[in-house]
Amino acid sequence: MGKLVYEGSVKADIEDRALTHLQLVITAKLRRGEPFSFTWREDMSVGGGRTTVWVHAGSSLVFKYSGSRQPSINRAWIEALAFTASAPSGLYLVPEPAEGSAPPAERLDVPAHA
Image (cartoon, rainbow, N blue to C red; front, side, top):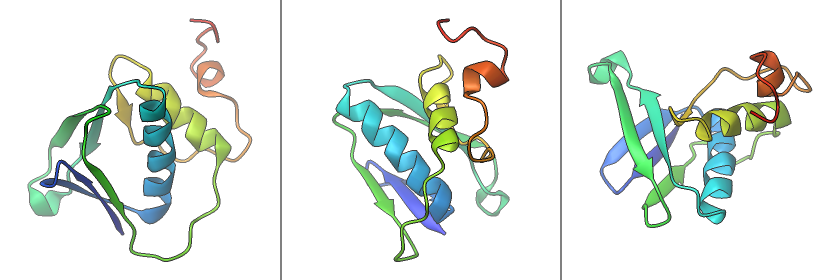
């Protein structure tokens, strides 16, 4: 189980494979200068609920992995996460789709240009 640390105090436990995919999406958006919100559900062991943070170029983010090997990358998952990150609701963790599945816009019957 990995950990995302935001601004040195807000922490989220996220499985290493999911955290790797989130890191790729988050860093890509920040490289392009695109701030966004990121929401995750809290575990019941810490009271449940959800947390939302505003991620921007000045954010302090740490991606801490429990394992030493980088998992294989699922391009469809990257696309699905990037789709949420660009939506008004912001980035949130979606279930991993099958490799090579339809892009998010097609799965939601939303025109690709919308």
